[in-house]
Length: 183
Image (tube, one colour):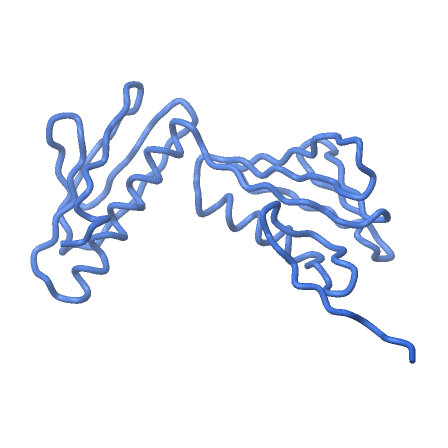
């Protein structure tokens, strides 16, 4: 059996889980999420937990077994605590600030770049003492949406390899190149 797929999913207090056919709806303090899983996979409720089973050991069933368990687990975590991605803008001339719900960035282009997050995702730009690094925090209850928004922001100005300027994840390491050498 799949090591991930066989793990039971604990349902914490304050979370309402509804199973209807092959659709699960999870409601919690941070919002509501729904997911429809493949028909061959079975999800059932047992003693305050959710259990995911597969019918056979076929390759496709094994693949969906762990996937469905992890997606439902992420839904439960999302409606209780939520997810967060942290980015940094490196470079003295690059800046970002919030204007209402819109993220406004100066990234070295002739115009400012505006980014409106989708529903359910919030963006913050906490102030720091450093003028070289500007942090950006992306939060929400849907893990996929938070990751997608963070990736779209990073894509606006990816870090360049010579000075490391640009937008990167907080824990990302940028491989640097040497540059020109004089003889």
